[in-house]
Length: 86
Image: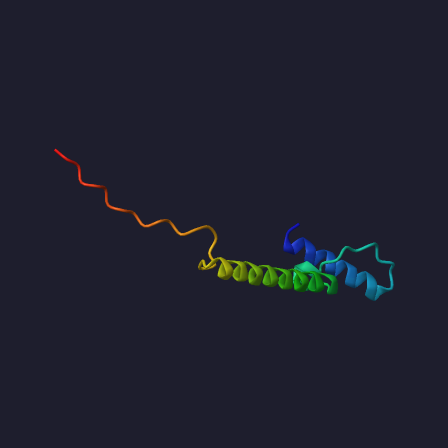
């Protein structure tokens, strides 16, 4: 549904409410305005905390192994090829 249709639904609902008419069930348009519900805020905070904890655990494990904390091992340095005999 495009924004103009959503705004028209909002206008109709407001007019009906102002006139005292019964308004049919309305689904939330919170996302239209980018407003998060309390539940969404709590979930996102928990996800951020979990991601931070996992990142800290990965860094601690990497330090314990003696690596730089990046995923995977660094590629080994290339050794020059041994000289070939004629």
